[in-house]
Image (tube, rainbow, N blue to C red; front, side, top):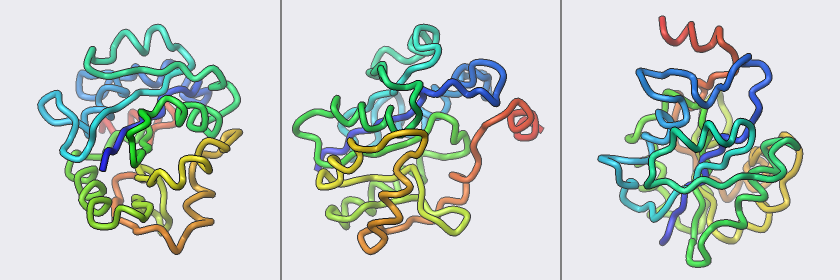
Length: 195
């Protein structure tokens, strides 16, 4: 199994009123803070072979803060929404990649332990989609086997992978991850979490 990360950080974050990817979380840019859940001591978690941060809005400043060990990919279609960015970035996965782990660069409460639980479940059920479960539904972070790459590459607009998860419910194994419900959309969200 070869699992590669696509961390989506391409959005304009209109509601945030600032460059959300660079917002300070415990002294780190938010995108780096979120990335750290997928790494340990600067290396990808066991079971992951590689990772790419998908950038778009404010690409030049966002790419500057990323660690040199991490690839970034500029999604040409980022302005058309998350679905477009994800679909486009499926094309940059290595040919030998068997699974893609899709994450968001604003889910600031997710821990390495939570990602390890997803990777473990994927190892046990390599043919299934493994998805975080929060607020009574399946969402990202989620691991998709290669058989779903073509569906992911056809996503468009502002919808991410949620429809694929719903339409393939029988093929989804859910891992409880209440912290995945916490994401940052506005400055108020950030202040609330800081308190």
